[in-house]
Image 1 (tube, rainbow, N blue to C red):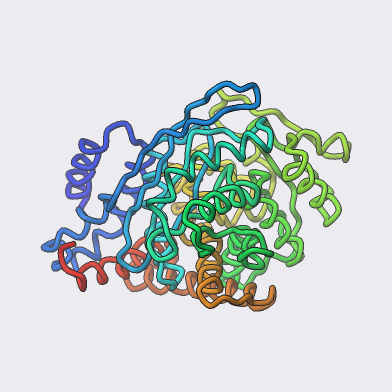
Image 2 (cartoon, one colour; image 1 turned 180 degrees about the vertical axis):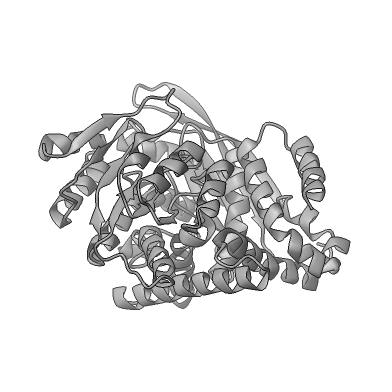
Length: 453
């Protein structure tokens, strides 16, 4: 089996050079689904795997815009429409200097299986730009978003491709993007999710990824007769996902100890409360400040700067029961994973996309801790985007309680599918295999039904 995987990956790498994150995402899935191809030889004959790793469409474009000094700036825009077998392309837009084609392809590929797991009819896609919203004025962000959508609008639509937000794309950016789309096409339609509540957005959408991440952790803990209540939880990141993961942990009686950003992290051994969390939300969402300012307000907390050259992140050495990585890809390496296990962590639920390296994943699985991979654990965000699409199509709004109830039900369904699929393929308790296989089979069967297209 290893030889088959190696041969397949050699072909993928040769076709997609210098796209390390994409290679990593594909390798993880291919490794998991080999037993499926042995049981279902028709997949091999139809070249399902070869087709599923090729995007249906890759769009790259320039984005020229003018800054506040009147200087012309040029960024690069992307939209990778990966697979629409089970529904319109669905996936976020990321604005961050690190964005390149390989990262967008990795995110789009992951999205295919994540969306499949949600039980909703959504294909997988992803997009974004190497534009950095940090330090930009509202007017600069608006002009960039308008320039970005002036090209993107021709490739998206409510029944073809429905983008959402991601890192660097929050409510402000979605508003500017939607306004430009509406102006160009002269139609008010559900082409973006994460919209404002007054103009087509869904209640719980901002909270959904973080809430879902914690719901998934709770489901995993339940398999061992435990709950979040009383657990020490470390959270990385301090953006949307981290904030609402922390909020849900507090609601369920857990203790939140940490937040981080790209410069460093804070540890509050007293634990967060609603007031402290509100301060973080104001700091990051309104003032757009740095997390180190937390200790100015709450001096009993400790701040530690991160060293770029360090081989491990001391955040993951904080004594904890539950880890909620919610920042970015590959933030936990094998040394970090070993430190988490050593610190007493028994449950990891990923809010970010692919935040653990393959070596780190191996440590978690061999240690037999509860490990929920991102494509399962953070699917609550796109699931609620799907619910927003449904509300837009029906021209109605559901209550906060209805949406939260549906989100909780979807996360339970995803957990159940992962557990049952892992068991059926001889790897009980392995959520990585369970998520990859369950997500893959639904898409593969649909592709078989539709023929060679």
